[in-house]
Length: 385
Image (cartoon, rainbow, N blue to C red; front, side, top):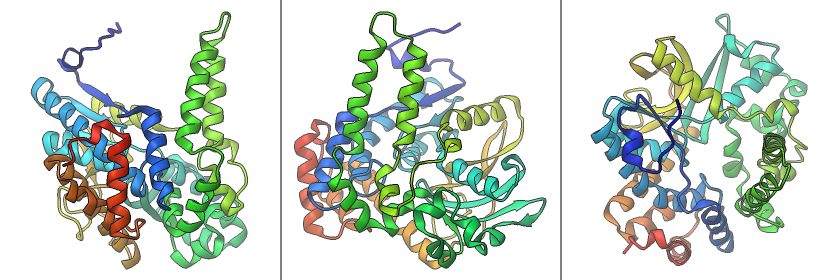
């Protein structure tokens, strides 16, 4: 039986699993995040850089309120967080729910699947050595039957350049790194090119999705419309245009058909099934660090392979990150902590600090203007004083 309600407390009572997928400010808010940042010459992407910080400042207070309600009304429930920025929001909620909130993202899963596929391996039988933060991680190895196959990939330029990340980052850069980065690291490694491409685009990603969503509702409400067909066409367009500016900058071409199927729902269902049925599995998830990465404290939420069973998700032991990756992870985690502090205190200066410390914001003065610009377009940031 399915019961619909607009009363959050009613929905929470007695729940075993809670899916949290919210967009504070809607797609109009996302478009404003992009516009304000790009006007200052910095990235406005919804999870990376200035846009991600603005989105986090809007979202964290709402996510914390949800977490407090869950702790009061459904203390035994498992919360599966879809809400971006996924690592930051999961960490905010974990302060009230501990390890009973788990963040999910399909990016690492898709990356591991692509690497396994190009190596001729079954993704279901591969162990992916992946670690970092959400949208800031690297594959350092891919083991099949105990053998690490990643060196074979890195040593073969033709093979390495045949899939999404090879096209996006370039063979030479991947060989120099000795790892395969999450696609979102393109915003860091090629920041100038990405910002220029987004400034020159006809529409920002948020504006495109805002218009696409409005068009979808118009089409699906028309007499005789086949809702599923309209939805499938809309979703396919959304997937095909994902990170299109980055791919155009890199000359990567269109996405492969195998990468257009999405994946959030598959990760969520696999996680829920493992916990509910005690069907042990391994998934890459956003969880509290414990002692996984020595450079971060135990409560820092990281993205890492986890063993999942009826008792939740348990991060596996991983090798330390190389210095260049450690530097980025620590810098971005410090920014996330400032966002959490600003959301908790309402301090405008702490919000400025969060922006100014981000590797992709290059001036304290820019950070100050960003805070003022976002306060002007987002009524929900009026709490920053």
